[in-house]
Length: 204
Ligand code: HEM
Ligand code: HEM
Image (cartoon, rainbow, N blue to C red):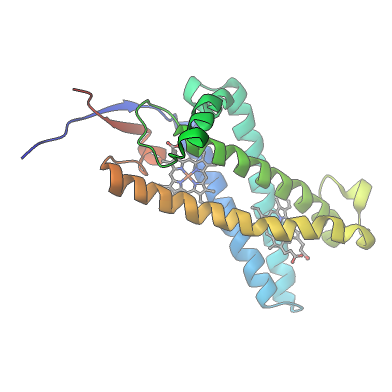
């Protein structure tokens, strides 16, 4: 029977892991509050849920700013540059091999492209959400510009509504990919954003 030996290294720092958990929880609360509010529409409970939605939205905005700041000032594995792997993306497009086993420490090079796209989408969600908060609830930083301006609502509500599907899609694919990588490559992976350790097979 052959035994595989694994090396491990501390890769993800505590603040990056904290921001990941904070943003993940905020996004779950945003999706759940929006779904529930749409379900109980035109009731007093719906207004409470939309207010909670905006609080969770404020939490997400703070989390995104924190991620950006840590991406500029944090350690190498948290840096924004650690998410940029253009040569690996071109290579994957040429060879059509997307589901590769990571050999170096740090973010999976191909998953990184999806993370960057995801950050762009949630940034648009935060901006359109702030606009909707000013229009519907008369609050937030965009109040002076958009406060109660219902004629402007479709410009923000449509992208906000459409991109929600991408946010849900990302979360499902992200978790499915973590499970699939573990099953296929036999290396602990999902725990890395909890413990900070990544495991790699020892090269013989
Ligand atoms: C991942 C992030 C988010 C998701 C998945 C999400 C999801 C949704 C959905 C599905 C709706 C209903 C859209 C419609 O049918 O018109 C909605 C509305 C809204 N969202 Fe978000 N949202 C997110 C982020 C935010 C943020 C960051 C804020 C504010 C800071 C925000 C504030 C609002 C407001 C004010 C509404 C309109 C509520 C109403 O019609 O009274 N959202 N959101
Ligand atoms: C709402 C749920 C979630 C969202 C929105 C989310 C989002 C993200 C994002 C944006 C990244 C890139 C990290 C960075 O900024 O540097 C990431 C990486 C990661 N996440 Fe999540 N995540 C979620 C749930 C989870 C869960 C439940 C786990 C498992 C415990 C997990 C494990 C990981 C791991 C291990 C990485 C690094 C993977 C790699 O090597 O590339 N995530 N996640």
